[in-house]
Image (tube, rainbow, N blue to C red; front, side, top):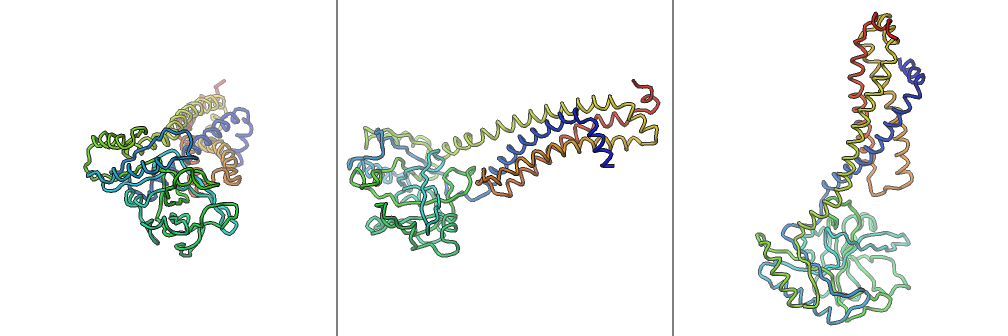
Amino acid sequence: MIRHLLKLVWNRKRMNALIILEIFFSFLVVFVVGTLGLYLWDNVRRPLGFSYQDVWSAQINMQQTSDDTFLPEQVETFKRLLAETQALPEVESAAGAMIVPYDFGIYTGRWQFDGRPIEADFNEVTQEFAQAMGLTLVQGRWFQKGDEALAWQPVVVNAAMARQVYGAADPVGKRFGDPSKDSPARERRVVGVVSEFRKGGELSGPGNYVFMLKQFGAGKGPAGNPGEGRPPHNLVIKVRPGTPAAFEEELSKRLQAVAPAWSFEVKPLTAARASSFRFRLTPLIVGGVVALFLMLMVGLGLIGVLWQNLLQRTREIGLRRAAGASRSNVHTQVLWEQLILTSFGVLLGAVLVIQIPLLDLIGFIRPGIFLGGIALAMLLIYLLAALCALYPSTMASRVQPAEALRYE
């Protein structure tokens, strides 16, 4: 039967080529949208690594054009800002950080481990950051008082970074990064491991993350790293539950009183989270709308082309009925022909998208998500093709043999 159907499809190859092409492009669009949707859904299910509830951020603009230089007065001003914020009755904890969760900025570094380069996002924070953000330590400790006086620089990594660098071994106390004679930086050692930390929020993927203790300099920074020691650009503030929104204005006034020449933008992390969600979900929503309209247009096109095709084959169908074929036989034949055409389009699309992981173009997507996107696209395209073939195949099965033989 399949052989006969393939012969029928080949005999009408010009008309069927258009259908296959429509299915091919539909498969690609549905695959992209479906894979992105599965990727975001998979990220939402993963642990976030911090708490954003009752956490506010205050972005600091020091009114300077470069971070490479800074003044001792700026360092002291930031210390007063931090102390003033921690003294407020509404505040449970406050910390300094170069970047905050849900911020679109990012710091990325590359370190050598036994000659093997490993990339990770990193952040420079004060010792109160873990308490303010509700981080969960799984090994070792967090930064503590007196760490600034150490001869080496303490770092805290997340579990993903610890696994990639140290495997199953305990990373606490081990050197972080190979020594380099070209770098003036002090030796770094791991003092603790947090379970997870995804700065971008629930929709961002997991990855390596490194925390470094913010050590304040006296100005300008050491040779070879002029930005080291600069004061943080943000305050992360854990407020008491039930703190009213009016606290935002009060906090801004307190900060402005300490640093009149600077400007501040205070907002809860829930607002930054909402902005991040809108930014990350907009491409998915737009792609979903485009895919929906494309599938609708393809569906209508398939119905029209298939119906016109069946009208041209009325005599053929009538001969089959006259030869003893039942209505269900005709109905099944039309459905199988449509599924064969769909298989050609899907196969071409699958061959194309399989090249993506082979070329390592989307390394951030797990193989399971990639295969799930292919399966979802196949399912939706086959479902669309079957639905589009139902009505034309039903009408074809109702053709009477005598009427079909007289059809011209």
